[in-house]
Image (cartoon, rainbow, N blue to C red):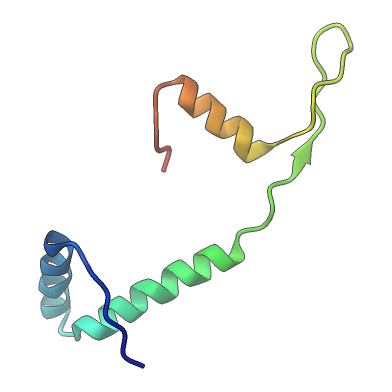
Length: 82
């Protein structure tokens, strides 16, 4: 199937150079990248909810670990933890 996509010039040049260096086509390099991303995203599971208790015995609201982790990194001024 053919599809037209817009790719940043610098990324395309880098991808073409990498494909040439590896002796593969740009198409195969792009397909490999897409397969990797699709597989990675399809394997992610819903974040497990945890039950937190605070000092004094009061129960905190149930939250997802990823939400708590995002808040922690945001508090450190980091916008992207990966």
